[in-house]
Image 1 (cartoon, rainbow, N blue to C red):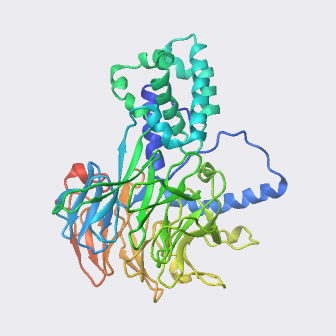
Image 2 (image 1 turned 60 degrees about the horizontal axis):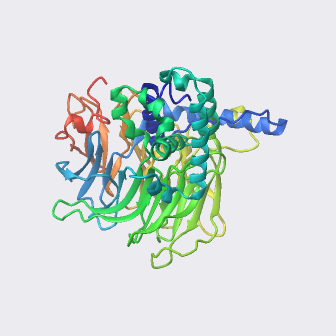
Image 3 (image 1 turned 90 degrees about the vertical axis):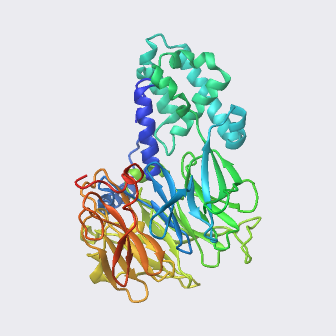
Length: 518
């Protein structure tokens, strides 16, 4: 990917595209020189390319997001809208802002929030990224200065030059979150050597100069905040982190916060105590989200050790892995035992969710593959598996063979109910089915397509309010919704749907509640 034409329109357009791509968990390919693999390795890649066919059906140009998050007690939810994050009650009425909210704490009063701020000085930022990354930035910045000093063309065409493109290819490349290095180099030079980068910045238009702070990396402050309107926010800062936060979750006791971040090269999983400000502790790499075990001691997650950008080129080998991070009383351990790889899986850029059940089993979505295999054995759909715990482990599909064909095609974004007995499985166009883990019965809950333009729509992942109530989207014209746009309804599994989004203004909800025909 060429990031810029000049550090102006093309750069800012690419920056927005990178941000949108990373928010959806998608990555770009490596810039490394391609090599020809040996025969055995070539057969392996051919096998993976065949399996990749089933994963290509997942994206279809759209993506699914958890726009609605219900509190554990079901009394409130926060909705991540197009114009901010809002607190709503059980009827959907907007009560006020839930600014920066990412996840609820078990008390249903506080949330984990992530607040983005700009560093005031390079030294402030350098203290957060560590010595190795400081060295990486300063080295790349020195090379950039040489490129600028040896450039003799028109400055508005600087980033079209051969020398700049070579710097971009060698220093930034197309690795996972490579944009971080570009932003850091720009910020470093503006702070420590502004005269060197001045010709490039001076060539920007007035509008582009007004957006110059977009070239500065953010500091992401992880905080605990009360969001109920009856009490003051009372922010509690836990950590300042230099990379974007992808996912966050409180342990069952609320004593520890787990989160994943877009660390350059590959995403990483961290934990931090919820009681005081401190430093985040690395749990594992190659992870975008996970789940807490029922006893709150372990984190379970899907991970891969291969270069993360390769996931955009096809499926790659990964594992379902667990690691103990807390003690029996919920406290964070000073040292973590080694991680345990529980099962091998094939992963795509749509990283699969995992969910922990009270009996110790782990749910995850994957394509069933058996080796040795012929072309006819290649999987066509994802399904949901349960990985047993204990000394004798086994993997069993929780979906009957007869139901797999009728399963909505985004099993990778399944949602476990609060009572841990049911799973909501969404599909690309908004379809939703409910799977009973006790009986194995699969029941369609939203059988018709919700989104008519699946190439552009951001789609709502169902969200459980209680063990028998779930919020989901219904198409425009649905009797439970409205005639003019997609709406969110609260569906009772015993029957009946009640719209909760009719009062949500367009500028809040049009991201995932498109108007009829859009």
